[in-house]
Length: 375
Image 1 (cartoon, rainbow, N blue to C red):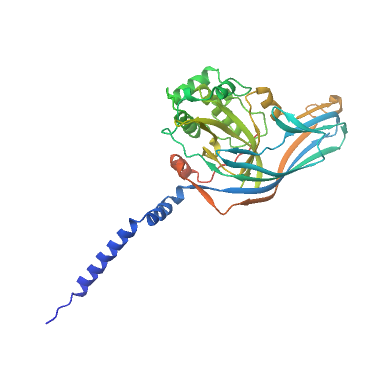
Image 2 (image 1 turned 180 degrees about the vertical axis):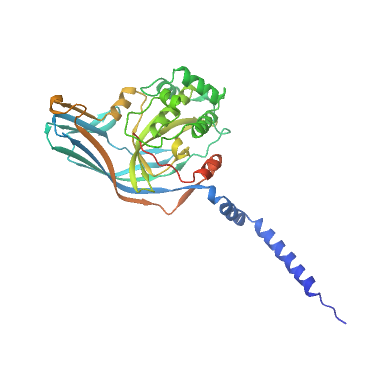
């Protein structure tokens, strides 16, 4: 008489076979990668591989009821630049209305300058710039095992970017002691930058209300532990310089994908020497959690060259002579600047930022990145 396995036994065999098949599938790299993406996706930050955009920038000078005798205003001409073999910033076209009074080199880059005579009463002048650009994302996959030490930094950069510079005050006791407490004698450049970044993310708060004002010095931000984007970038530069690592400001604008608007912005550039020779210029944006990430939702128009007078000149691009007696007490000419997005298009391709793990706890508390304004 033939015997057949019971339904119970057959069911167990089917379950065992199914488990074996599942385990076999789990061992394949493709399935493992898919599972990793599924499990980690809530904690992963992704940026578009590239962004193309057209943005209008309007600068308005108004007599505000009084009398302006004459004024000048200027703006750097946005440059193309490449880093790490990537075309990070490509300018397709820039249009000016009206045409600049002069256009030429200053501090090694071109500047557009407008000169104008008097304005009175309700008269005003609008200068309009329209930028068409393509920005490509860059992620620097570096760590302490790849990074060389402070002694391996190029002298050209240490000579240029280790000293006091306008608001970047390095040689002050509070800056020096804070840097020493953060870095704790570390000499590996990547480890120094990572420690400063982590400390700032944990301790320096972005203001609840951002106002257009002069940037705070590194000392002022350390005393208040509050700072907007360029305040924090200035402090980061000071702490890095106090630790022997050259760091400098980049300034431009950033697109807020939530509000669908452009705002002025500032972040840090610095340099990581490599044990294999050479090195990488990297970008760090503490307020937006972009550590060694060039997020393509921005453009840079000015890179600090280490000269405080040049940095001051960038911030105070409007100068005028006016008749004080034509204004009430506390009044004067008005200067406003704003951006208007015409086109903003992100690539379908996205780049995953695996290094986000160090920020995953903070991002669980605040999953929405803070997009912030340069004062």
